[in-house]
Amino acid sequence: MFKAVLFDLDGTLLNTLIDLADAMNASLAHFGYPAQPVEAYKYFIGDAVETEAKRAMPASALAAGEAGPESARNIETIKKVADLSEQIYDKCWHKNTRPYPGIPELLSNLTRRNMPMAVLSNKPDNFTKIMVEKLLPHWHFEIVQGALPDIPVKPDPTSALQIAKRLKLLPEQFLYVGDTNTDMKTAVAAKMFPAGCLWGYRTADELLASGAKILVKTPAEVLDIVDNPRK
Image (cartoon, rainbow, N blue to C red; front, top):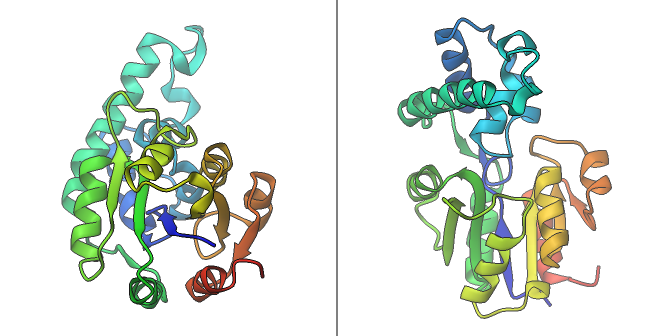
């Protein structure tokens, strides 16, 4: 039986796609780079903002002949785009972002079952906490954690394992709900049960290939897993 649920944030609890795309596109425009389609950000986000910036930037933005994207010059360029995107996002994150349909009901039902809930995101920690506080204010999460200095981001399992330890539970007692390959790999590495949600940003094939043990089409199906763990 599961004794806690660990949620990803972007693409799982909250539909953040438009605001994330708008912020990065505004940063790209500032540096003279072309904007990317909103749908493309489904594959750009999920692995921290620097990685999102690198994926969104055109190849021509990165200096050739300098050891590729990981050269010091290119890392600096990527960081500038990422940092400005974060500054813009700080002002626009709430414009379009909302909980997915069915998420409020899921959280209320888990609360009624006294099921501890936590959130783990690769979004910067301050944004993660603010967004949960402002957009999911009616539910209690035991731990809300984003990317922190000196702690590797997902799919490294360090943060997930720390959450399990803080809740005094075994990793195997967690249902991990996320929407990307990063989330499924994190769950597998942490020995949590990976449930891939199909309302988010990635495909069923990607989730299954990355270790998902079950796919859920709606938030209500997450509750079904909790109530019927052998199903």
